[in-house]
Image 1: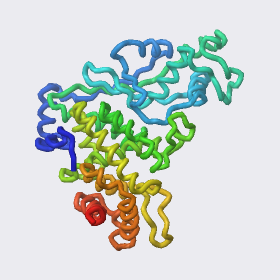
Image 2: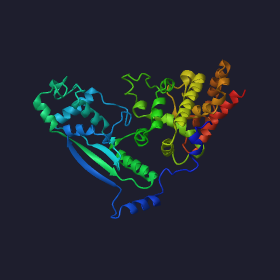
Image 3: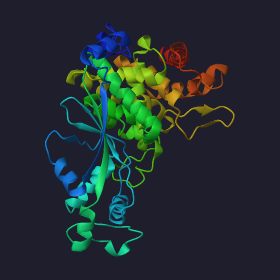
Length: 393
């Protein structure tokens, strides 16, 4: 298996998925003489005009369009938030997180912040209002003065989570992760990959999002390829960032020898390590994924990642994530000799042997089974053996 330069060495001094709690406790006690916790929670309320002005301050809140979930609000959803302010209907608090002197990070409320900002900058024309339809078509400046004054008196609540840095970077990352997980359990309802998108934001995370929009990959998973398609935001795989998680699974499982805990934990661990990837590593990984995908598609075409049903003698209409794993890993191993595998005869042989493979009892492992290291290796081995026999002929 071809690995990026940093991948080859990043497992030598293996940082724990959770930090050394004894060291973490010691750090805390050294810094907090009065047994204070490393987290302080503040609840604030600001008038909307003042809140918008504060967003203009440098190093106040870090707002990134890719930072949270993908399902962006449309103009109607934004407008109804403004309608709620006009009618004084309670609006959920935004939740922001801050460590020492870093800018606030938005854990929940990105869409509300953007809607309020766009409204006060006259970039939002109200539409789809249900209770005050007579205000449809108005921007902030075009509203009657009395209504503008009414809105300006409204406030937005925020819950600020303030966490001081310890001397242990792993403990700091762990603290942030656990804080976010607890919030997610209580109210946020983020998917695992949406949480990673926030906790491990960086160049590698951006690469995952980029590769997930590969046309071959998107088509295989039934995701609209047009970024401007109205159906894109409605696609559950895209909306929940499951596509980005699938790309992450490929990269992480190439390092199966170092697999530990459960799959979500291993993916978290790989994301932690990804923060140290160089630009060269990132380019290597991008090329590795793209070339592997092209090679697999060359053999399977429209049946890519879709299991074969021996009873109906048809290919499934839906791609399967376990079968995706073994397919991508199997072809990734053969990238160095990819030029040898483009004969039509060989492509037909792979298709036929794949059908035969799904007739065997062990085929059930290709589309499910466990997620322990041994079970993943067994599943990969079944497909890899078939591929080796065919290509070796």
